[in-house]
Structure formats: structure tokens, C-alpha cells
Length: 447
Ligand code: 5AD
Ligand code: SF4
Image 1 (cartoon, protein in one colour):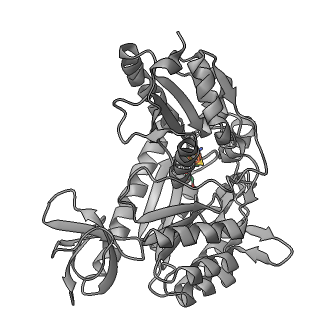
Image 2 (cartoon, rainbow, N blue to C red; image 1 turned 60 degrees about the vertical axis):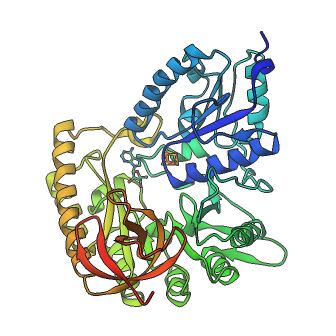
């Protein structure tokens, strides 16, 4: 039977992985909206289920295989449902994903304009996979569609892909070569978010600092782009992620320092504190270079919030190398860090040429020590905020109590405080009274 006879064109998009994937899911929703699909907010009753996947660690992929097994039970009840896999895992595994009994189509990160056709073919019981790279694809002209009406925070992908080839990382293989979006498109998107009353926007890229776009009028690098964005929307909080330490310039630090609405928060993944390991990782900077960037940031922006990605157990990491990572964490005093243990990814330089030689139990034990240290540092940094007052953008009710709201400071710290009739999207001044390693607590003042 032709499946299309029985559908209402309701599409549900489920997102895993990074903020880039969240932004991509909104782009996909935009493409499907143009093709008369309705975006479903829950999986129940959806005709098409799209899963936007991540490949960064083996566990991220395991989660997707488990999810597909769950979806098998939904599809058993309704055989007409179409299921598609998109994102990094779709690109990495490709056509082989079609061998899973529930998967009808597969599309890589540069193939999303093709989704309506892939879905139509699925209705005709034809299974296709499109994992072609397209170096020109920045999804120019597609308006992202939010999956909820209440959104106050938007994402704009300013670069796609990555040319850095860190030896452990799958991203250059799943997202292809780096390209920058036209700054005119980015500014139009900012104006749209402004019209729609957004309070915060995040400029996204695997390495935002290498943004560069040139036309016959202007040559635009990242510092000039973010300043243009900040001036276009002075009432919106501007964030950006991710920065590569090798490209973080003094010019950018100055732009953050002088524009009030660019948040004083920098996510600057260090990955390791040992020069030997940084070289094996092909990070192209040293511990000394990184610490110099941190010192310049701290001297020009004293109230900066700093966060990082760090992982242990990479090829060749000795206890001494690991100690250097712990020592760097103490030196920098991060407010927050995402911490992982190394997971070898097939196809990367490390998988081909470096031995995954740190035993699993040592990786686990080092990760625990790293998390323990970071909790101590976060607590110390958060306690130092007691007595200070921060501007907080309200995001919603706290998980623990309906009388409490939560929001974030510009340093990206979560703050919990009593409601006082405030709501999502309001900006309030909160004086901090208490601190744990993960959260600040306080009271609204001057309201
Ligand atoms: N194993 C463990 N962690 C990894 N990351 C990237 N690749 C790997 C890997 N193979 C981490 C890095 C990166 C973050 C997104 O994930 O810290 O910054
Ligand atoms: Fe995961 Fe990296 Fe792909 Fe984001 S870019 S979805 S973190 S593999």
C-alpha cells in the first residue's frame, strides 16, 4: 500500500548532541514547514519521526541504537510511520543504518534540503540515503522554526563543518569542511529574532573564531561579526560557542569587553593540560599559549565566566600528563567544565595511528578525580559570588519548586530565586545568598 494515503503530515524531530544539532533541527523544521508538514511536539501521533544524532563518543551512538529499539515498538503498532536518521551518526554510518528494521531514510548534515523527497520515497517504500557533502551549504534562505512558541533563546549557525582535524574528533568527517554563512543572512536572522522578542541569541560554530566572509563591500571576521550582531540587537544577550584557543584573538576579547550585551562568558575547551598530549591531539597550541589567553581574558574582563571541555585517557596519557591537566584546571579556576573519558572514534587519525592504551578502569578513575576537583573549584567560585548582584534572564520554574524561578547570569551560571510574579523572558536583578557547586540562590532586588 502507498503509505501517503494514510498520513496527516505530522513530523516529530528528536535531537541529541550539541547546540549545533538543536539549531539544525530548527532548520529541518523550517524546511518541513515550507513543505506543509506540521511540527508535532510529542512523538505520539506523529507520521514522520526524525532523529538528529551525535557521534562524538561511542555512548552517544549507543543511546540512538537503544532509542531505535524503542521506536520499533511504536512502528509495530503503526506500520505507516516513517523514521529517518539525520546528523553526525547518519553521516558516519551512512547507508548501513538502513539495515536497521525501523529506519526508512538517512540524511547527513549537508542533505537536509532533500528531506521532503527522502520522506516521499519512504512512503513509496523506497529506502534512500543521502550523505553527500556540499561545501556551499549554509542553509541560506531557510527560516528556522522553533519547536515551541515560548522560546526566548535562539541559535544562529555562523559556520558549519570543521577544518581543524583534532586527532580524536569525528566532526571533520561527519560535518565536512568549514564554511561561513553570509553575514547579511546572519544579520537578517538577528533582526527576525529581535522582532519576535527573543531575549538571547547564541552564535554557533565548531570554531566560531575562524568565521570569515568577504563580499565586494566588506571583509568580516568573527570579532567584527559579533560586534555587528551586538549593535543590531542591543537589547538581546549575545552568546557564542565554541571557541578554539588557537584562534581566540585579543581583538575578540576587546569586543566582548566593550559591548555590554555580549555576555561575559567564554567557553574555551582546553581538552588537556599536557603539551605532549595536546600535540598528539593536534590542538595546535601549548599549555603556555592557553594560559596566556586566559590571563589576557581575565585582565580585560575581570568578571568573566569561564568554562571548558576536558577529557582524560587519551592515547599516551600518563599519570604525570593527567596531573598537568588537574593542575591547569586549578590554575584557570573554571566556573564549569564538561568532562569526558576518551572514546576512540573509527576513521579518525587517532584510531588509525595512535594506540588507545589507557585501560578503561584508569580512564574511569581519572574522570572521577577530574569531576571531584572541578566540583571543588566550582563551589569555591560560586561561593565567591555570595553577596554580589547579577542580572538574570528568567528561563522558567525551578525543577524543585513551583514558587521558585531559575535563570542564568551573563557568566552562564544558574540562579534560583523566589517568583515575585516574574516569568520566563523577564530580566531581574538577583542578590546571591547561597551557593552550591552547581547553583546560586538569591533574592530579586529593586523589583
Ligand atoms: N572522546 C571523548 N571526548 C571527545 N570529545 C570530542 N571527541 C571525543 C572523543 N573521541 C569531547 C571534546 C569536545 C567535546 C564536544 O567532546 O572535549 O570538545
Ligand atoms: Fe555530536 Fe559533534 Fe556532531 Fe555535535 S558536531 S552532533 S557534538 S558529533
